[in-house]
Amino acid sequence: MIVLPWPPSVNRMWRSVRGRNILSKEGREYREAGLEALQAQGPRCWPADVRLSVSICVYPPDRRRRDLDNMPKAVLDLLTHGGVYGDDSQIDRLEIVRRECHPGGRVIVDVRCL
Image 1 (cartoon, helix red, strand yellow):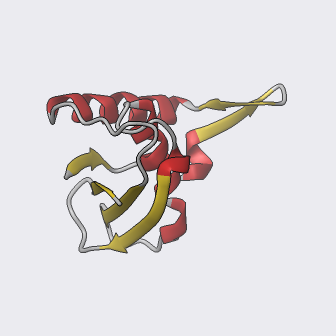
Image 2: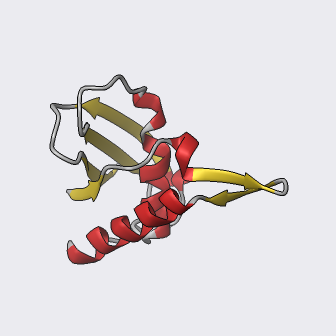
């Protein structure tokens, strides 16, 4: 189980600059905080040839309406960047569940081998 900070929305993660998509300031801050959280929880690494199941439980920071399908992109990209697995293409099963609110928000991820 991996506990991560609440990510920004996909619309706020990326910026278009001169026709190129780059990680926004908010996206860079999230990546930095997420990588710190990953490092604090110890190394996890799945080989590139392993098929994976990923379960994501989201605990929103408040009761505002949010599209659940916008959540996984930032989280999955962080896990890839943090070396938890080689690439999102290893994921054959993806589950996303919304839970109760949590102050500041958080995301709990469970990665398993299929």
